[in-house]
Every structure is written in C-alpha cells, then in structure tokens.
Amino acid sequence: MNVPGSTDQELKDAPVKRLRWWFHLLVSLESLQRFVLANRPDVQALVDISALRQDPLYFWLTVTLVSFVVAGLREELWRSGFLAGMRGLWPQRFDPLQGQLAAVAMGAVVFGLGHLAQGPIAVLPTALLGFGLGAIMVLHRSIWPAVLAHGLFDATTFVALALLPWLADRMPQLR
Image (cartoon, rainbow, N blue to C red):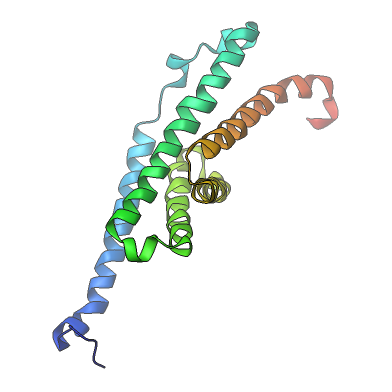
C-alpha cells in the first residue's frame, strides 16, 4: 500500500506509533486521576457548613458563587481553551462544525474524567453534560450561554441536594 509522502518504514512503524500514543494517553489520564484525587479542595475550610444551614443569605451567596464562578465560568473557560487549542493545532480537522463537535466529544470525555473525584458513577453523566455545554458553546459561538447553563445546572443541583435532608424529615417513607 502506497501513501503519498510515506516511506515503507514509516508505514511499518505506524501501528507501533499508534499504540505508543494510546499508552501515553492512558498514563496521562491515570496521572490526572491521581492528581485530582490528591488535590481535592478542603470544602470544610472554604465554606462554613453551619452558616449554610443557619443563614439563608450566606447559603444563596455561596450557591451563586460556587455555581456560576467557581464551576460555571472556570470550567467553561477550560472548555473554550480546549476547543480553541484543538482548532489551532489541527484547523483542517476541527474548523468545520463536524470537527468542532468531535472536539466537544473529546473534551467531554476529559471533563467527565475530571469529575472522577465525585465517584465513578458521576463520570458518564458529567461527560454527557459536558458534551451538551460544549455544543451550546459551539452553536452559539460564545462562552456565555454555556456559563449560564452550567451555573443554573449546578445551582439547581446544589439546592436540590440541600433540600434532601429537609424532605427526608417531612417524608419518612423516603428513608
């Protein structure tokens, strides 16, 4: 088989290069997982849990700050940088809409794995959410709709989690 611009030796080495690439990717993902697990934020030191329960204003300000700035804006900046990097490095592959959505899918996998600290069961739903947020960013050609959607999703999730103990007290059949 002749590929223009390739020597016979390059064609023979191609499968080995692909295997090396996958090996390095897996090692990198394992290193990322170890880094994330070793560097979890100490939430107890950042947020006063008793104040969250006692002070509604503190609760809502914390939910807003965490949802829209710490999670929404920070993670969407990461995603836009990832997508811009893919387009910058391989413009022929990632400039068309189909290529941009392929980059979104790749970023969604990394995004899901980045949430591994929340448990293995969180990876797939987070990756799917990441794909949706990336698609919003690509289709709107702006980071802000994705930041808003991400912040609203996180705020809703945090409030729902905060309401679970309250619901459990009022609905003993849920226990």
